[in-house]
Image (cartoon, rainbow, N blue to C red; front, side, top):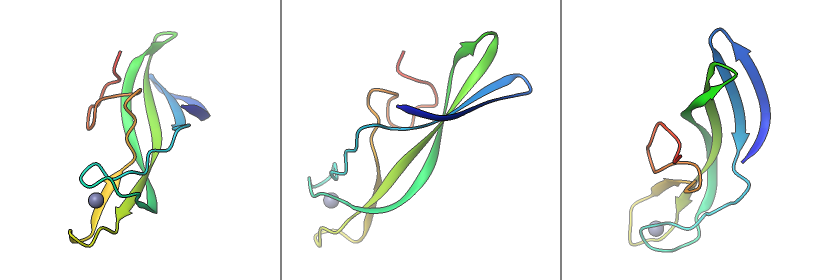
Length: 91
Ligand SMILES: [Zn+2]
């Protein structure tokens, strides 16, 4: 992850980051996806100097153009950070 910004707001420390690696391959069919947009994924991490930390990860979303499916949108995977759809990091 590249940390792009950080802020302390109330009791929380917010870290804004983007993944360094890009994995644009559709898990369903293996086709390389087409860049669609970016969404924010929030993951709550361990406290930094007493403040609970919230990671705001900007992940890319892709469209799979494989004609066997109707339009399928998938999100960039971040396996080093957290399990898919998890709200807390891997560690
Ligand atoms: Zn696909």
